[in-house]
Length: 422
Ligand code: NIG
Ligand code: FE
Image (cartoon, rainbow, N blue to C red; front, side, top):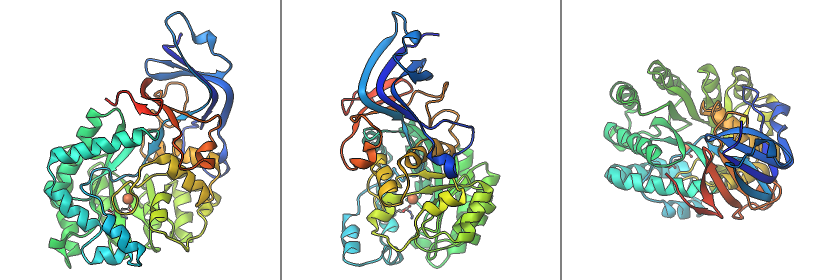
């Protein structure tokens, strides 16, 4: 078979999909081909290999030259809060002067501040903001993204957020997966009535989310001062009955039993995890739950005092990396920056970080049969870097390194500019 497009690159780098998330030593094994090609047919990877790939070419094949540049799979961001209204620079300044994230939330700010503004925002404005942020992350190499609700905390606005995410997915070339996060915080009208709020979510919101097919997954903020491990088990158990697979915000600020719940429920992923207990880490390894680390969040919260996340690799937990893009704790969705933080702040190796942001992230979203690596037959989602070696992602952290992005074999970003985002 001949290719529609053949890209010749200085370096082609990818995880090799062995049909399960990579963990332990396996997470450090990437395929690196110098002076190589990617052949694309009907938007999918036809072949990759060393050399010029001329065997895949005929007179109809377009040849794209990326010599001297590194090519990696499109990045998969498995954790974002992309739908929101308004930024929170004032809160950021308060935190820099010593206020804690949790105190601000307890006083009705933080997440609840974004909730007020998201409730007020029109569906159209939310959609515009979301599409702009999708452009922003496409420019930094993301080609698949998970989007959560959780700034509505009432039926109407939770459904509105999920509708916006779905519509954004239809209009934009990025592939999306959506997550119902009604249990992101207790809204002011339910203050002191946490049980009633969860009951409301389970009886009056979740059934509609499921019926209208607005979400793939359900999530909860399992954290001291927010929702308990027991409440998480109950809500996510209920969501499972409605066909929504579980993922969790777990042990972000203190050990809260989230990793244990994730293992118990066989969640697809437990996220944050800096303060997960040793038992929780072991249980996750045993249950094959992916650990999604969000180093942008701890960076912007100036979090310290956590053990090296290498403990997850050592315990055999497959690791993914996500941005957590949101207006509070991580106001960027730049996965290249996140990968660099994974290496420079979380002690991951470049190979581990690449796999975490591609193949393992794809597994955590249940989309690895389509994306996450350059295996034959997967979507041709690719990023070409303005660098000869993919390790420049880490070595030159913060630099604008994206040359081109292909989504399903179609050029979406060229010379660092969007040419077409639909
Ligand atoms: O993942 N931790 C909870 N939720 C988000 C923050 C949301 C916000 O502050 O607006 C997070 O960090
Ligand atoms: Fe989050």
